[in-house]
Length: 160
Image 1 (tube, rainbow, N blue to C red):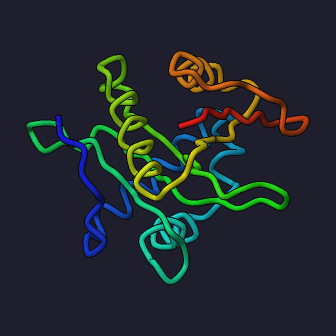
Image 2: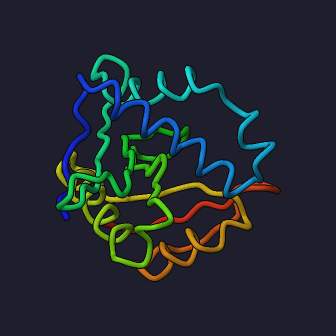
Image 3: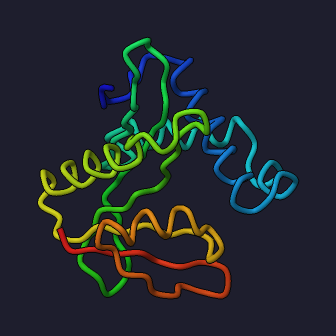
């Protein structure tokens, strides 16, 4: 398997990542709510936001199997919150169900953290729903600390 940047000229790759962003929401908050949260057009623009250096400092990485299948993706960016130093944010991570339990999520996490270190960041974080146990456990296995963010969300952080 290879981890590579998404091709910003590939509409097919942008659409696939957007569809999988929606699939992530549907897995975490339920099909009806997840599908209703954002239109596919909005999600595609969100992928493009992360590819446009005028709009964000970010990267979109794909996990590509030897047969060419895109097994997963992760989106990382520099995030700024009031009262904090800039940090690296995993905006989304997704591995297709048929490719899970093969180390792909770990490879994407490691690639994202390497990108963050290359940006000079010393903290990595992600936000997720409180009941997204698979993602929470994945990050905790990699040294991330869980803290409540609000009634529905948690924040997982780790020093890089």
